[in-house]
Picture 1: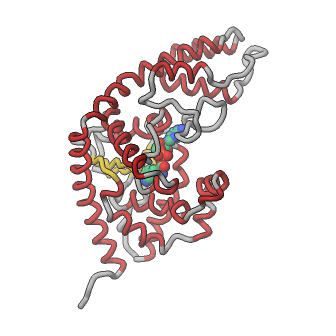
Picture 2: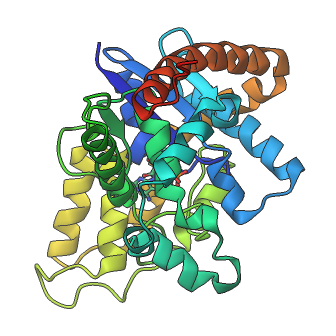
Picture 3: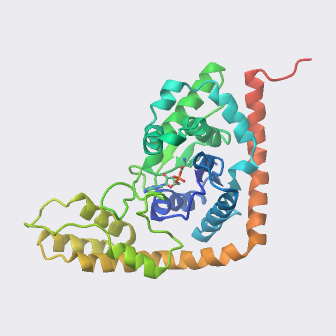
Length: 331
Ligand code: TYM
């Protein structure tokens, strides 16, 4: 079986972007691949969470993975910090990751711009740790959303560089995987532009109360409406249609498309429909999250089982890595 690795940072509740950009692919892939799905708690340290927030964030994402249907019997579900081999490989990879290329990474530049007082070394080498996560299990595929495209490109670069440097073929070059085989996706937010994000304040969470979902959707940004038939949609309106396509039926989408094109659309109706379709999708997941969160014994068992299996795979690779680097004791 081919190997799959992907992770999510425990920095908040999962939102529709996480689900449709990543988790939906996890569910599909766990049937046919050897999957490693983890919680990237070390990556989340770049923004300095308190210990309490870190702990609750990890527990939340673990419960959400399970509630979405990731099956610990089929997939290896684990917490990044439970597998210290990753940090060891990260240290080795850092020796061949260059300041220039790291500084040029879009997400680094963006984070440095948004938060100039916290440009730490972990932020700079974020793609190196991510590469370690992926290649330590020799993954062939990485299901992630569009925002991770460049990080994944860097992972390929570091894997290839290691292979060439030590004249070996230890690491496959990890490829993106998308749910429908098309382009990597970006789920938009409700604020008119950009992607849905945990920190952007424009997200709808899987665990969110239906009342709050209705409120958020009804407040979503639109425009004054089409002024003439078949006009181009403004970005904010296009985004609502994108969300509608994700959660509604094709019939519903073409109904509102037609209404837009003949200028009879009422955005209030579109939003009501969108809110109800989102709620129909999230409600069962929400209930399951709240149930699973109560069962700490089960969560602990899943995490321990996953850690054991992930470590086994990581140790195997790390031994090979140490061998080719020259750490094998000859005396
Ligand atoms: P994170 O925690 O920001 O996001 C988790 C996953 O959700 C996807 N995603 C989206 N997809 C589409 N539209 C959106 N609006 C949207 N928002 C988030 C992300 O693309 C991602 O797949 N660096 C990673 C975590 C990570 C990782 C890894 C992933 C660490 N090591 C190794 C894969 C392999 C991150 O911060 O994702």
